[in-house]
Amino acid sequence: MIIRSMTIDDYDQVYALWSGIKGFGIRAVDDSKEGISRFLQRNPNLSVVAEDNKVIIGSILCGHDGRRGTLYHVCVAERYRKHGVGREMVSEAVSRLKKEGINKVNLIAFCNNLLGNNFWRKEKFTFRDDLNYYDLAISEENKTDFVS
Image (cartoon, rainbow, N blue to C red; front, side):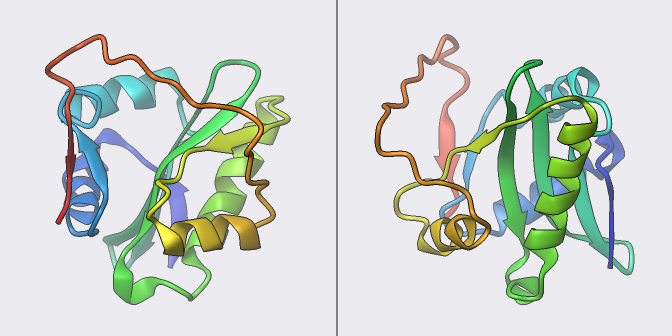
């Protein structure tokens, strides 16, 4: 297994990975090939994929605003879970953020994602119950579909 930078050439495999994970939220515009291309261009060499025999088995979209880093769409193919793939990807993404001078990383995990929430706690991420998260959809086209 190798961890490497994600490129737009990985999009089809990454999208297939996302589409195969039950409960995964995919946004119509943000997660389109064009949306991911914009994200990767804005955040060069921060997003990572895990690859086994040229097959993508995990991914993290990673970016920052100059002050705080954010991890999005962190996932590992089911048959590769509990083998350290997620841990290695997170370590690599955080290391890349550190090189950019970023000192804090955040992420969002759906409340019903028990596996993910347990993973983040084990990775020493702090659960925050002292703030509220808000968002505003400014494009009606950008609806979220959940994989069933």
